[in-house]
Length: 217
Image (cartoon, rainbow, N blue to C red):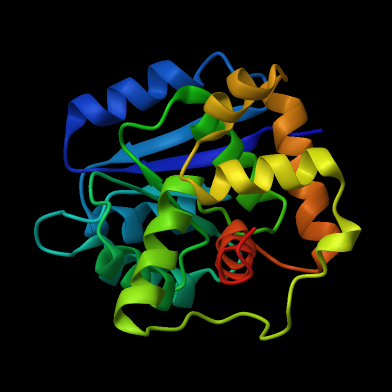
């Protein structure tokens, strides 16, 4: 099985170096390039053929939003994972509108970053609990809606442990925090999250949290 090819796009060299250091020891990942602007990203994508792009939002000349939009037109199969300092609902919603596949904050722990990368690579969307909580808050306070099924969540299909994990996700806990609280491994938590999406026929955690919050889970 080949390595997942990753391109880093961030105007801060120290951030790119930090990510390279963090990812270089992962056997299934390969950082094929790192650039400091959206324009550079558009230039190197055809040559480097990355499968995933970790993308900053605030960059000179061309914003991350605009970069994501152009990349999705240039190469729709590339997965885009935002890597930003902004935990504001407007940034998250606009990123989704521009076709990103996931959203990570720059203070995310390594396990969260790796989970995000592997989740979007497998064709799923990834929004960690902290971002999902922000989206739910935006829906509740501003009446905004994100795409997703309108049906109720069939809680009877979830196990007791899955309901426990889901409740912690709605409270904004990340995978490591949930693992520590329930005395589980991070991989076990990740497997439960994937199983919940499969059982409820939902495509991402944000949808799961939205419906769970609505039903008071």
